[in-house]
Image (cartoon, rainbow, N blue to C red; front, top):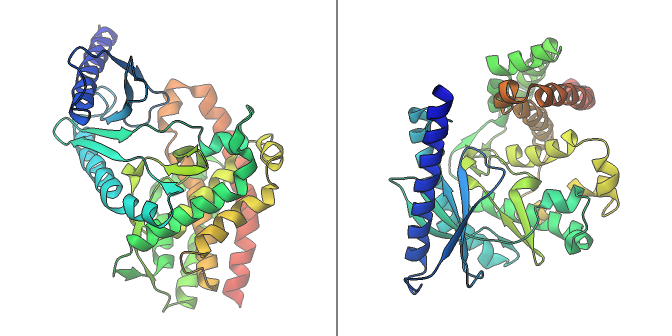
Length: 362
């Protein structure tokens, strides 16, 4: 009976979402004929939000993507209401910050925000046709953008640098203190204990505390960070990049975005590396991203480089925190991911910890 009620609730939510999508489409295109037939299509995969593509059946050139909050059966009403400001923040960034980035380089873009409805929690975006950067880098099917991999990675670094610079605040802090607080959290200890690396939390806290003592005057301005800057959140179309999903944006330090992009490479499966190397040697991917970033933002000194190494390990720890929904729904997939993550984290941990300890010794 409960399953039946859940199915009915989801069906009603989808019907209401289709109605809202058609209404928003007519508001965005007021010259649309009254008898025009609209086609709605649900996009997969969906994260914490539902996404619907709406286009006119006779003129497919008119198209938009609608992002909406999920039905209450997938989230508690309190969590759903908490995510309404996230859509508002994304709309603000797309309306105020993204146009400034595009004005400086038309190849670095975000989808245009066409409409925002705060009460039902709807955000209408420009529809962009093209593969994700993840598909361009690691996909099997051929795309014409593969020859431009270095240029695309440099554009990603340029977009990120401009985003950090435009949202820079006057508030400063010691990033090592942030890292110490992040590694000290109980959730991090639970993740490391599950993979058999409980001592890693103690070691990371010790070396981070030592770095706080070694660089007491180290200060970095805070800025808005993307929060999920990875190749699967970047679309490629006609030599341009479109950065998606800014709803995770929050105040933080620029290392977090750069480290998450690097951690995504760390977590890729073994056969993805030779695939990516056919387009550009794998050792040149991250330097290309950093080169694009360094041309438009101050590059890092020695303490910044050490902080970036800590942020890389923290970014790897973030991945399992987002898999909790897989444990019950897909236990086999969750088990395989855990095994692979454990191997990759131990490899990165063995690589970074000696360097950090050596810096503390100096």
